[in-house]
Image 1: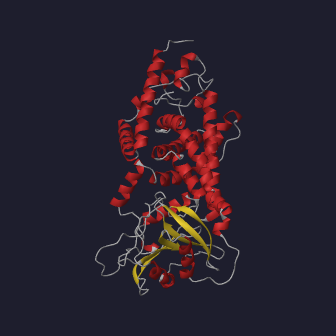
Image 2 (image 1 turned 135 degrees about the horizontal axis):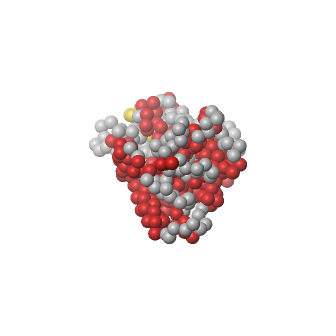
Image 3 (image 1 turned 90 degrees about the vertical axis):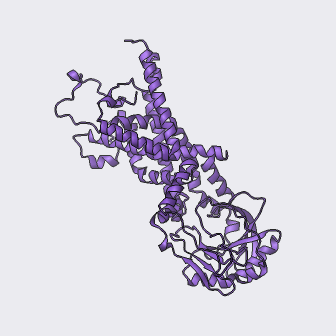
Length: 491
């Protein structure tokens, strides 16, 4: 097949004779203008990029249920069986500091619900970026129950962090991120062009209504059952797949940089409260940021004992200001800084309110309500939480798992269809699929051709791995066309 093919092999008639001059039969419905291009891009991208998407789907299925697995495996750190009133936050932190006096206190996350532990976080210079050491404390007894390294703004424990990195880069470091970026960058393209092909196929069923068959496989055609299930399942998972592709690109290396630049230009970045106390000589770094934020390298407070004694006053002031969900309290590093109390991503939490509190007086020095975030910053936050399986807890994780199973099924069916239709004769083996029929692009409207080329250039610039691989697909297609011409004609 070629980029200029007009129809896929399974759509070509097997017995009807061609019409003289190549004109369509009277009354025949004309195909969608994008159908030939959609066919070739869906085929080439599916053939060469689908293995990377398949790996991302398999690792993503594990990552989707990682929070639930973490809760089961690390229950001894995350949950306690004791009951009764909570000890003061200062007493809990004092107990944790006593176990790790060698490390600088960084933050504390009070137990968000009954039966949960309090996390006391320390900066450890031996850990990597975005990693901190957490001592888990029973809030009812103020006794430490264990410690562990935690990662990122979600506070992932080692198992979930390992699965996150496995999904992100296969534990190959920065080079490994190219696999996930390629998968995320092409996923939306393959899905949308697949939608074009499926709509075109549904429209050809003249005797049936298009509406129900767009969402259901046509089981009346046993020979095309794989194709029908491939398309129907693809439609079912399409909205979530597009969301996962978009949020996945925000964490990528090259496309992610362009996304960050675009958000900055349009003022869509995540806002943050200022930790600088009024009248301070120098501004302090604001507390905030998105998933996979930079590492924590703040120095030890000037007077740790005094800061710890202020924690209960600070937390009470923050709760009066509406910070009522699970939160993390950042300990000031210098006398010029305030405590920053910021809600963290937890299942069922849809807002991230934050306040800065003067530890000496309990006065609020800055406040940032989630309602004041830019709309796109809110959507980004919700999308990231959904991608991480944290937006609405277990149902979120089960939905992601189902979508990943559906995506894997679509990919496997796609390869099975290709395998059944693959060329077996030596003369056509280089074509990868059915023999090509060229000339469609020459008959395409120049305006449509120019629009498609400009769109390809724009997408290729903004999403570099799509641009480079698209150029590679074009080179392969031209090479296969030239090789097919060089083959001797056989009958």
